[in-house]
Length: 315
Image: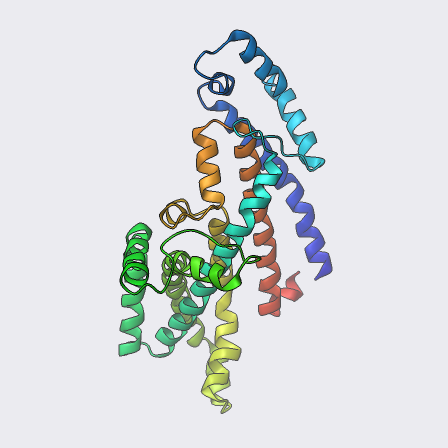
C-alpha cells in the first residue's frame, strides 16, 4: 500500500506542473489589459506603466510564470489587483465556507443516493424500485436555482424555520451555521444523490448476478450479509470515483447556489476575479482547485484498495 501511495504521489508532480502552466497560459490569452482596468477612468500612462512594473506585466510571459511559480513554492500566491489583499488570505477566508457546504452536500448525496440505489437494486421492478427511479429523474431534472427558491419560500417565508440567506461561521455559532447551510447543501446534494443512485443501482444489479454472490447465498448466509458485505462492497468502486469527482466540483464553487443563498464561498470569489481581470486571484484559486481534484483522485485510489482487497495484490 505504501509503495502504491508513493508511486501515485510521484505522478502528482508532473500533473500539477502541467496544470500550473495551463492555468497561467490560458489566463494570459484572454483579451484586454488588466493594467488598463486597474488604472481607472483617467488611464494615466504613468500609472499604467507603474502597475505593469509592479505586477511584472511588462516582462515576457515565460518570465512572469517563473515569478509566479517561485511565489507559489514559497507560499505566496500573489496579491489581488483589485482589493490589494494577498490571494492566500482570500483563499483561507473562502475555502472553509465552501468546504463546509460541500461536505454537507456530499454527505446528504451519499446517504440518499447509495441507500436509494441499494434498495432499488435489491427490490428490482417493485414499487420501491419505481419510486427510487422517479426520485433520480426528479433530482437530475430539477434546476438548482428553482429548488433553492422553493426551499426559501417554504422553510423561510412560510414556516420561518430557517434563514433565507447569509452565512454564519461554525466558530461563531454552530447551530446558526448549520441552519444557514442546510438548505443550500440539500440543493447541491439533491442532484448528486440522483446520479449516485443510478450508478449504485447499476453496479449493484451487476454484482448481484455474479457467481460469488450466488455462492454466498447457496452457503446459507443472511441476505443482509450477502448484500452489504459481498455485493455492496464490490459495487462501490464506480461510486467512489463519482463521489470524489462530485466533491471536487462542489469545492471548486457552486456559483448559482452561493448567489441565491448569499454564501461567500469559492464560486463568488472566482466569478468576481474573472470579471475584474484579477490575474492573481484567478490563477491562485484555479491552482488550488486543481490540487484538490488531484488529491481527491489519490484518496479515491486509496479507497479502492481498502474496499476491494483484490486490488491490493495488483498494486
